[in-house]
Structure formats: structure tokens, C-alpha cells
Image 1 (cartoon, rainbow, N blue to C red):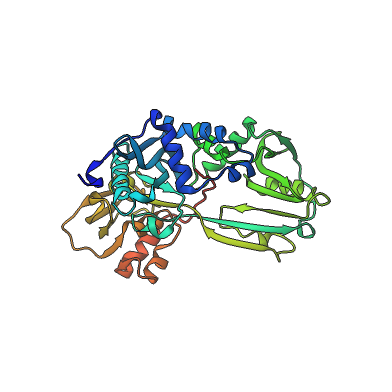
Image 2: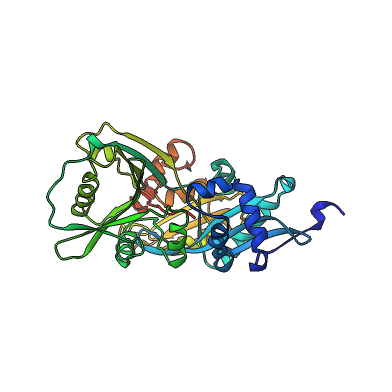
Length: 403
């Protein structure tokens, strides 16, 4: 019997926890030194990853009793243009090298996507360790992360605001309250359940602190999550509901002028900090962050809020998907004047052709139809491209989570 014949796919359960953890550690080469640098011990990482098996759907290949390949899918929700979508968060992907190049991960992903379809998780997000690898399997970039560095002398001058800032523990309920309001307005953002919050804090340093901005009515309107290390103020995330809160939080950062040499952090929205600062000669780096793929195009379209233009539209297209046959073929899209869509298989002559990667990034508005057509990712009739421009909302995706 060959090695491949010995392998069986199955559910990874809590009884396999030690093997699950060992495979993760091997694949991602997490050493004891790495753990110590962020204040983690061996036992702590084991406890931290146990929720993956408790709350996620985990699939693996077994060679007898030995777990040799695995992936996990978290049950998450995301906001897409104001509507909540069930999202399968793919993570924990790994195979031991002696079992590589046997097609194991392809089959695991195919099965995981089929189960997402059954659970009505019509879209999947992941953090890519290799963009080409996941692109070949149908995922595409849908969000960016901008890293910035501001010297102490470049910090904005203090401006008067009617509210105030309080330093609080990161578990304070006002932080969740602000994020809930914020994420309800931010397209593509995670709608954090308890599991998402647990993952959000997973690898943070112990010194992480929250600074919450309150308006004159004592309502929280924004927060800053940060830590200070070796004269540098590190920002994990800053969110604000309005410009008043933004100014108030930067006032708080500026109050550290004599304490730090610079401020570094991340911004997850398409808003370069340099333009807002008086001294905009700062260092900014933009890089791709998360990827997504539509799991079931029919389910997704039925939920998707197209822009209401007051008239009905109809488009027929050929769709390609490298893994999922239910997303392959010719479809006709119907969208009524209120923006409600429906997708049906069709024998009509298609006027557009595209793949699932292009459709995903286009419908999430990371890249517009006109741009995708210009680089030949979207092919077909120019008049139809204009229709797509009109019915897809314009809002830059925001995603600041990691799992």
C-alpha cells in the first residue's frame, strides 16, 4: 500500500489537540524564543490555540493515527456594504513537508469550501502567507494595511476639543461598544463576536493599553490601542467615529512628545496620514493585507446589496473558478431597481468573462470594474463595465483583524 492510500481525511477534534499544535508550530516555525519575545510560554500558546478546536471546523489528513495536514475554518461575520454576511475564516493551514506535493491541501480546501457552502458561509477571508498560492485557489486581495512612522517633532499640535481621553484596560466594555458602531459603518469589517475578539487579542503584549475618547456628553467616540517600548509608541489600532474623536486621540498621542522618539502604527483604511499632518514628510508603507473568495456565487449575490439605480439591469457572464464547479459556467445576473440581485444559470450569450478572484475583489470594491477591465482581468462589453460601475457601491474595504 502506498503512503497516499494510507491517508484518510477526517475531523480534527479536541483529542488531537497536541498533534494539531505541534503541526502548527512546525509549519510556521514558532520557536520558544519567538514566544518569549512576546511574553508567551509554551503552556500559554497551547491554551491559546485550544479554542480553534473547540469553536472552529477543523479538517485534517491522518496517516493512521498521525495528523499530517490540516486547516481550520472559524465561524465569523463581516459587514459588506451594511449587510451582515456569514464568513468562513480560513486559518491553521499546514502540511508536514514529507507529505507535500500529494494534493492533500487542495482536497482539504475543496472539502472546507463545500462545508462552508452548506453552512451558508458565502464568503471566506484569510491572511495569506503566500499570495500566489491562494490566488491559484480562488482567493484575491481585498484589503490593505498602511504602516506609518511619525517622528516626535512631526506630531500634530494640540487642538482644543470638547471631549476628553481616558486610559482604560483593554477589556473595558466601551471599547467593544465603539467598535460595534464603527464596524457597522465600515465596509468589509469584521463584526466581532466573542471568538473574533479573543483572536484579536491573541498575540498582544501584556503592556497593551486603551485610550478612549469621550465627547462632551460622555459617550465613547473612538479609541486607541497602543504600547510603549524603547521610546517608541506603537499603535495597534485607532478608530474614531468623527473628526473630533480623531483630533482628541492625536492630542493624547502628542502629549507623549517628551516620552517617545517616534510613533509607529497601522492604518487599515485608504486614508494616507501624511495629508492630514502639518508635517507630512513621514514614512508610509502600503502592503496587501487580507484576501477573500466568494464561496457560493449564487448565495452571495442573493445577499449582496447592489446600489439602487431605480431601473432593472440584466448581465450575462462566464465565470471561472479553479476549485468549485458550482461557481463555473454561464450565469445571468438580474438586479432590480432597489438593488436586489438574483443569479441564475443561463443559455444566453455572455457579454462578460471573469474568474472568481476578479469577481470577489470587484464586488468588495477593492478594485473597480474600469480598472479590472483596463488590466484585462475583466473582459467583454465596455457598456456592461459601465453598468457594473454604477451598481457596485464605492467604499474602500476596512479589515484590521488577524487570526
